[in-house]
Picture 1 (cartoon, rainbow, N blue to C red):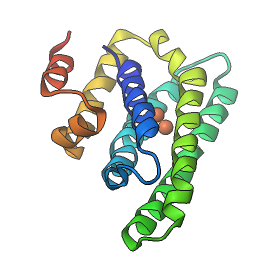
Picture 2 (picture 1 turned 120 degrees about the horizontal axis):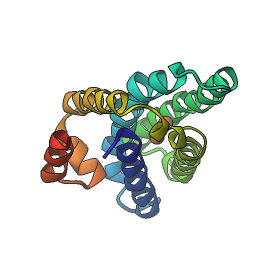
Picture 3 (picture 1 turned 60 degrees about the vertical axis):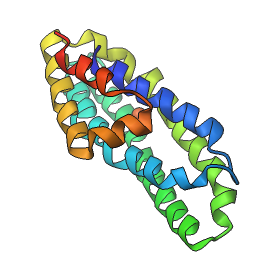
Length: 167
Ligand SMILES: [Fe+2]
Ligand SMILES: [Fe+2]
């Protein structure tokens, strides 16, 4: 498994959470979930995946960098929207119910752009670069907390152990 695949598994978990985390139901899971997106998934992208992929000498390096920067800018919007939703949820403000679908829509559209315009280039990088990137990312996930990661992505300890040991 490489890092693009792992990030797409996160996207899959995010998509499925979005489908059942509907207004009026299961809303208490929102806080931990938005924290996972900001403090884990986005950190792996911004600290490891994006820097590596934009440094590669692509023929269209400059325009590709602009594409990545444009997509990366969504992270700030997602964080602001998520922070507002957390506040509204805690204070019982009805904006929470109104805006929750927009949060998931924004995140899902953002994730689709990443898969379409950025992640597809990852297999073109060397195996060594991709392996080191995976190691660095697993350190970020460790720092976030394996148990929280497993719970938010609905994976398992065995899955984490497997990707840590895969050669
Ligand atoms: Fe992202
Ligand atoms: Fe993503």
